[in-house]
Amino acid sequence: MPTAVSPPPSTPNRGPAEAPPSDRREAELQQQVAELREFAYMAAHDLAEPLRTVSGYVQLLARRRAARLDPQASEWLRMAVEGAARMQDLLEGALAACQAPDRDARRLSPSADAVAAALANLRRMIEQRRAVVRCGNLPAVLAEPALLTRLFQNLIANAIRHNPGAAPEISIEGEERAWDWLFRVADNGPGIAGSPVPGLGLQICARNVERHGGRLWTARARGGAVVCFTLAKS
Image (cartoon, rainbow, N blue to C red):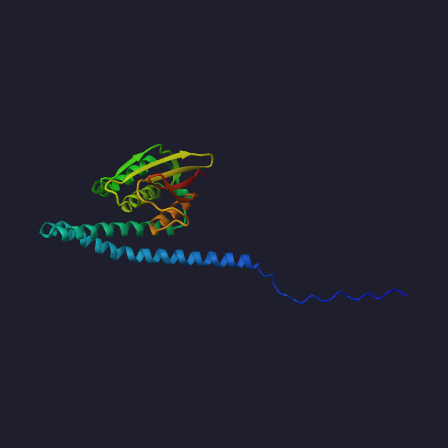
């Protein structure tokens, strides 16, 4: 007599397959990042207009009433004007960082031209602090020209602003590597090293670099500090 074979145990109906926890967590993080980016863009956009109003009236006051103020009041007014200008740079950088990368906007751009434009924008700060900026090899790179100028401008301004010395010294040089370009912005200030990149200004710079397929980090150097960043070749 043949042996009876019991039917296999029934499998409970589990419904549609669920995504692994790691995939769900990654999707949640991406959603949070998108929401934070949207919030940062709206906040920066909404703050830009009142800041322009404040900056405009402070500059108007500086032009029309500076001669009537005592030296201390004039210094306070100067600091207010410069502070408003720095805040404007941060907001513009934040707006640019929140935008999606536009690969079509990138083209071969001389980094020497971007540095020259940045130095022209920072001429007043450089003259007031008697800063010296030396440039080495500056290759042409694949980048969005406006963002490349702002990147160098923010790095140079940051090096001057956080240097308590009487005459900040900054050197900028780049080199071509197999898969990317490497740039170093070194200064003779106290500097700061480590990861993650500290400070909102440098975080905006890091985001700018990431838009170009690179990364940014800080390091210590003899007699100062250096900010290094890479830009992808494609």
